[in-house]
Image 1: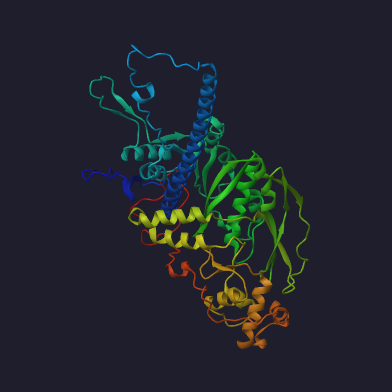
Image 2: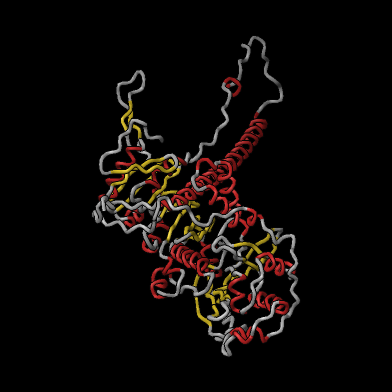
Length: 567
């Protein structure tokens, strides 16, 4: 949608344009809009478009399989009928003399049209819409959208949404009658505005017959109060998009009691706290869905600036609900060197048996033995802290991320933040499934030594037989299949050629314990051919450019005008 050049912005409003959409923002703070969240909105459009294509491909595959089954069933029925008729027919052929010539059969007279698959139109529910910009962009930019339900509890926000929906010509509209008819045609609204409680709205859509295909939660703060309703109102295979901006709760140890009440787990006090934040939110989504016989499948989970953004698919399957038990873990984190030790809550045992040529899989679950470590860190003898429980499975689906990346690369001109999207998605696509990352600078600080370069650290790990990748959550970080003990061994080799000044190290420092142990291997820091990953060749734009001078975090919408524009 393009706003006409003749359009006059009403007094007391400003026109905000983003991609194909435009909205009117009041001078007061009645409806909240964060311009820097353009990256979030761009990413959401790309992910929902990619999911929609995947979903329609899955539906078409099932539809064609159904056609094949019906065709085989029809052929079998015809063969059975032909066999039955052959038994009742006489051996002597009746005379055809004087009989009228046979015309074309019914089958040949009417050529049968091949059935065609009709793509499914998806319904999106945005529970907390504010200005409605996100919903308007979904309606304008995602071709497979049937309609978007844009909801907000604030009357001022709802008024702003209706105004913006009409500005973008997405409202219900009476069109001129078709030729030969008198009755005017009513064009349905592409964005349906609703004023009400978000949870009540989603609970009203939890029955299977009126579920929606995509639910988007983008609150100011935590999404925790809305998750129970959201996991129930998404269709099977549908997409749940969740934002949480309360990183002071999720990624610090300042409010562990609040983190537990919101997300059911304790946060991590370590450099990898932002990945732990993602895993805490996924844990909440997984356990909330499991209560209703449903499970989540994360396709993309990102830690971005001051928030986390997650995209998960929701399914209904009892056996996969049980597997959540084995994808949940508590982590023991060292307060000194930040080594972590995973303690799964449960384990899955799968036995396969073969009978009459068929392979049957028998799955059962057991409580995991523990603890995985003592109360003092094996590496530096510091105290251990408990974090979690949290999600220990994969954060991303590589095929999905690859498809989103391909879409963005083919449509760079359609996204204002395409450069940053490409960078983040490239790193996410390569990430290892192992939990948590580390930075060479942080490990060096524990050893009080000169820091090896990222390439040297990565090469040493690769030469030692471990896998490595970058992490999107922290610049200059690495994920690896190596344990912290293996990483420390590499740094013990490093300090042999880069000695530590022990006179600068306190007698009670954990550094002395780390250095007192002998390295089990001799690390090789020469460049490994795989140390330069594809993501390291892409410029990763980690932070979005400020939209205006002196821009900062916006205030929570108050519904009142607190400051005069002239001040």
